[in-house]
Image (cartoon, rainbow, N blue to C red; front, side, top):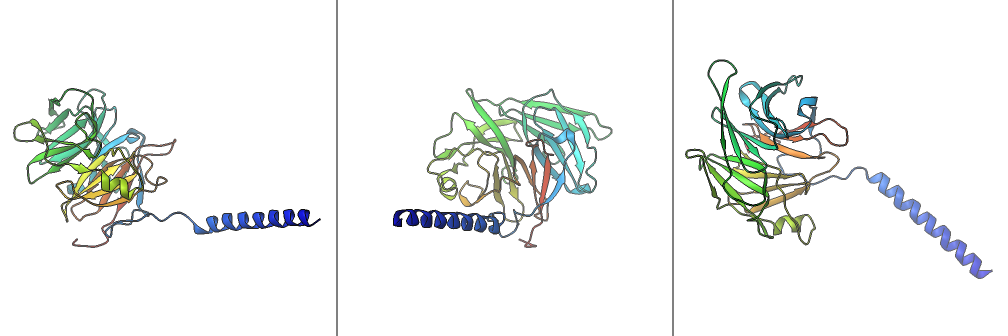
Length: 290
């Protein structure tokens, strides 16, 4: 009798404890991920993008008319989308269907990065929609994959961050420099140390895969986005990591584009995921002047 009573008492205690656990989990609400001081990464202003941009993979803000230029993976089109009226985008054909990953505009020339490391330049003629293109082939042999490129005005060059390159070490991400004056590639002095990123994400070892990078205009910091690792890394221009922010996967389902406005507002684009729309996320700079 005592044994039966003890069993039922223990069972009831376990049921109550389990009920309290689930009740407390439900009451806690969505997880609030940490954010940089300038941005609330948990509450973006979201724009659903049209079908043509379902595989958006690179963005560039155009302040003159408050629009973004964009490219889509596997599509040789340059798109222009107005943020105030995100309807059907304008577009220009610049190349064959290929694996295009990132976009930068320097002065009046657009540069499109392929996953192989090749870069295509696009220059529009002053009148009409006609254009001239030029392709620069990545020189290193072997298996090399890129998704991320940003413009460094100090060196008048494009820096390419490897996603998966043979030159990568286990503890670092290697980078390449593309000189805009000469059209040539050289290994960059910038090296991104993976150890502090792994530590911040609670991983013993980590293969960091950059999907987009941009320089924040006010602070000259690198904002490096990783879709695979679901993280935003802030580093200085030498590659020294300053902060790491895990990203909420319910918001950042496949983030592969990043850009800034001159005022410091942050833009992040998501490719389509699980049948939902591709999105553009906008984060206002909460600290004007900084």
